[in-house]
Length: 234
Image 1 (tube, rainbow, N blue to C red):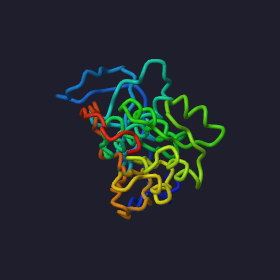
Image 2: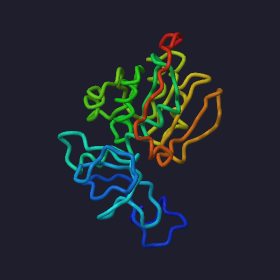
Image 3: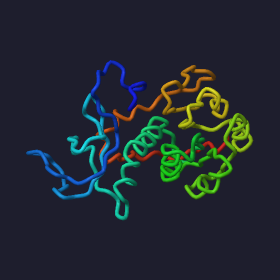
Image 4: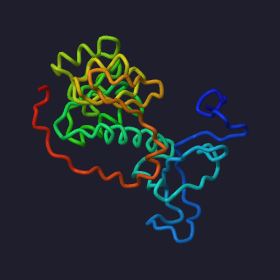
């Protein structure tokens, strides 16, 4: 994006990239409904457009795109959270599975994948995730129920853990086309990769995340869903 070779089609330089920001509130617009105050440390997600991007000294965003920085985090740490976590939240909302369902996550040690694992567990799912050997303990610590080696055999290994296939797949590694084998007939798959396949094979519903659609999901209240009654692998 900085070099102008990705995600900047039709935009003439100069442009400012960056979707994550963290800093201090300098001003609040008139008639803005917020409990934030000038001087608060905050983080925000930014919808990039031309020279409107997070790589700037000052940025103006809707109040719904801003929240306080969690206690104990530096600005650098906080600025890794908004886009990645909202992408993971959107993926889970698109899957829209009942509690107790089984979800596979690719790229689980990555910035979006680790959020997907943690949020999926919070939502009451059984999580099967991939990891390189060096990241296996990290992904276990994130809460994954089963951690399998990443790579071409991951879908087959998932099938061993979830006979019949998982109910849903969150692909953050850009391998949705290959990983669809892990999903049961009629299941669901969501990818954060633009190039993911949407084949509709075996009745699997596939969708892509587009985080700008969630840039003002300030509270992200997940509506309650009934428990899954079909067992983990039925």
